Amino acid sequence: MEVNYYTGNTYDQIMGLTIPSSSGYTETRINAGRVKNSGIEVNINATPLKIGDFSWRTILNFLTTNPS
Figure (cartoon, rainbow, N blue to C red):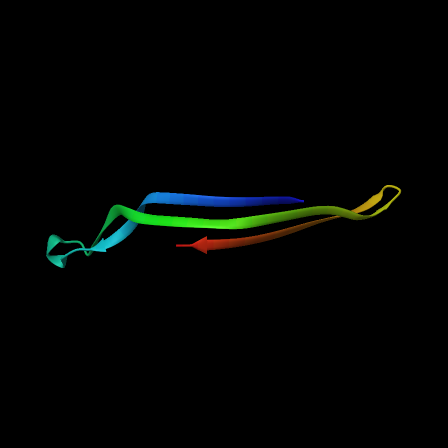
């Protein structure tokens, strides 16, 4: 079993900005976005059945994210 907590900050995301159409364009791109997220990830690996050369492996993954 593996449990991880993560947190991340992303800056300068490219976003669209509306500009006057008199410029010949309707939108420009700027580096202005910011996203912060955090969460928990849980991984469980198991082999519930193993008979001779046959085995059944199970992997369970759970993830929760809290964007802000």
